[in-house]
Length: 54
Image (tube, rainbow, N blue to C red):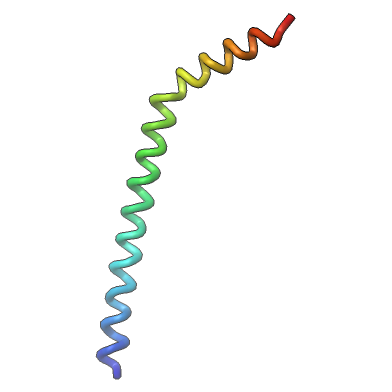
């Protein structure tokens, strides 16, 4: 019975590492997307804000 629980503990450690890597990849993709689109979004909001002013 100890062998079964010992193997399970090893899998949990690997799962944590896999989820951490996945979270890091998703975070990197979000940062790149926000950085690349940031100037375009700022321009659109500036134009829209300028049209609202009298």
